[in-house]
Amino acid sequence: MNELGGIISAAITPMEKDGSVDYDAYANQIGFLTKAGVNGFFINGTTGEGTYLSIEERRRCFEIAKVNKEKNQFLCLACIAASTREVVEQIRTFEKLEPDYFVVVPPYYFGADGRMIEKHYMTVAQATERPIIIYNIPQRTVNDVFEADIRALMASGKFAGMKDSSGDFIRFSRWALEGPRGFNWIQGEDLLDAESFIAGASGVVTGLSNIFPEPYVKMYAAFQAGDLKTMIECQRAINRLATIIDVSDGKVIPAIKAAVSLFGRCERWDRIEAESLSQSTISKIGEIIGKQ
Image 1 (cartoon, rainbow, N blue to C red):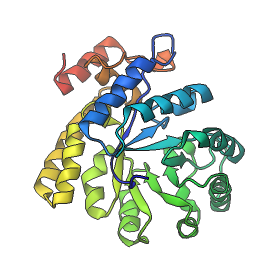
Image 2: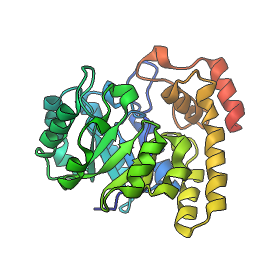
Image 3: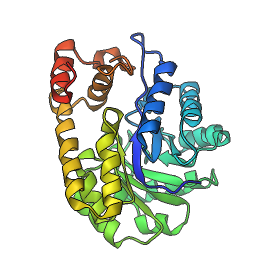
C-alpha cells in the first residue's frame, strides 16, 4: 500500500447535460492528473458529487480510476451516507474493489454529539480491515468530528488520518504539530495548503487541482526540498485560481467543472443541471484562468 500523503486530487465526475456520468471524460481526467504526478486520488467525495451518485456509478468511477492511475498512486474511496448502517453497507459492497483507503464522514442531517460520532467511526472500522480516513466537513454534515474523542480514535489503530475541510487552521495546525506520529493530518482547504505542510500536514486534498495540478505538485516537491520561497509562490498561484469560486457565488464544484470544460476535458454540467453555471459566469472564469 502506498503511503498516505502529498497531493491528493479530489477528482470531479464529468456529466452529460442529462445528468448521466460521462465515463470517457472521467477516464481522461484521471489520466490527465496521473500524468501530472499527483500522489493519490480522492474518489466519489464532495468534489466528485459522490452523494449524488448511485452505488453502481460509484463502483464504475472507482474501477476507471484504478485502471488509469500509476502503481505508485493511491486511491481513497469515499463512502458517504447519513447513517452508520448505510456506511457499513457501502464499505462491505466496495471492499472487493480493494481501495487503499476508505473515507468516511460523521453521521449527518441529524445532530450528533461526540459520543455518537465516536461510536459511528468505531462501528464502521469494525466492518473492514482497510484503513479509514476520517473526513471532517461540518459545513456539509452539520456535525464536527472534533466533538468526539479524537485521541481515542487515533489510538485504535484503525484510522490512517483525518482530512479536515473545516477551514479552522488554528485547530488543524495544533493537532498536526502535537498529535501522535503515524496519524496523518490532511488539509482539505486549498487556501491553506502551504501553511499546512509547514505545520506538519502529511498531505492536502484539492479540488482545484482538477484544473491546474502543476502548482500543487511543484509545491509538494518544494516542501520536500525545504524551499519555502517556491512554496509561497505556488500558494499565491493557487489563491489566484481560487478566485473562480468568488465569481461563481461560492459554487465550488460547478466552478471547477466549468474551468475544466474550457480545456475540453469535460462538459460544464453537474448532476443537478440547475447548479451548472451560466455562460457569462464561465466567461469570467475563463478570464481568470487565461482560457477565453
